Length: 189
Length: 189
DNA sequence: GGAAGCCTACCTATAGATAGGTAGATTGTC
DNA sequence: GACAATCTACCTATCTATAGGTAGGCTTCC
Image 1: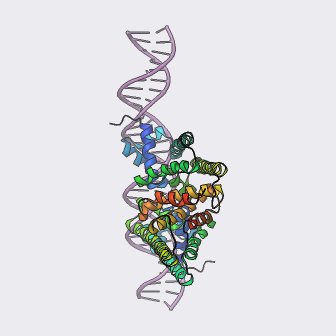
Image 2 (image 1 turned 135 degrees about the horizontal axis):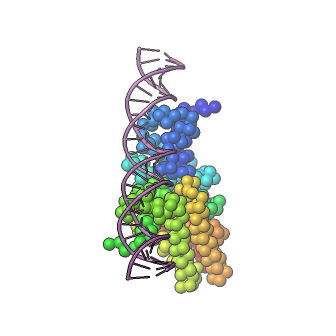
Image 3 (image 1 turned 30 degrees about the horizontal axis):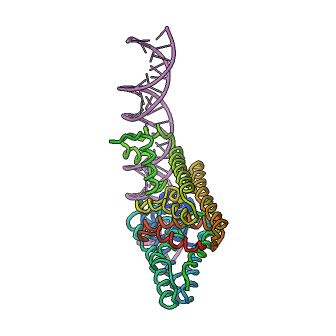
């Protein structure tokens, strides 16, 4: 009894399929079957696969921006903020999926240009926010780090993406927790 | 002037293509063109794509086993050993590729069973070795860790895989270095 | 009646895979 | 040493399934 409109259902399904199978292993046919329409009708909503890819990533990126803004307004302090950030990844881990962006990053060389640009923007937005947060921690809380804030940021994003990747392949169940512990130890105040 | 036999050339090409494009985005046609034969001849050497996948992974896994044994015989001490291990990933980073296993882990749900089994074995072999190495460090060198050795192991593998993923997508250039620094800080003796 | 949403019917390109065949080197046997 | 049998490494031609995509027609609802 799906009250959500078809376009949204398609976005949701596409996102799930990309996260679980990757961009090159899902088809308009998969989408059509999942939503209960024909492939031609999928093309009505999203003329090309690239259009759909951009739409999914744009929505995902907007969600990230909203989450980061929420953290910034509701939480103070570097470590608490980073904990909130890391928490975003726990959802994916518990579903056994990749982060949408991590999955697309893997397929980067095969993506349409517009989709690739979205992926780059997402990663940049993530790392820039972390970087700013750590820099603020250094200035305002006297934190010290084992390498530059921008390297720390990229490392955190990478570690989280990687832990999602590895926990799917039998690496264990609570790797995001472990990443959190390992990473925050290196931020000492 | 390729003196290497065709089967090896196919393995090499397949590995590169999987690392750069992913399992579902390379075809027998790509291989055939790269090596200079027809797709039917690729099937002669590797009857199915699954056979080829298994062969590539098996070779890769054997290389890992050899590397780990070399480290164990040539190096003593937990930290030096882990540094050597991490060094394996620098090669991939400098080529801008994923680790073969990391790339296949992403495509896990879409892989033939035999290939998936190889991927799982590789990850298990990696994490088990790291785990053993850290446990030895705790017993023999009195190291302390911020979480269990097995979690530390999975986290290190995840972080390295993730750093390869993210550095390809504009995250920066020396993330493996950063992972090394961040990770080894948490091993204190 | 006109737009939104979906349909049938089709197209082209490519995927992985198979059948059947060939040139040339290797081997076994008298 | 000659000759048949076999093997290796390719080939051409073809198959079936699926990919993404298009044109145009049928409802439904304001």
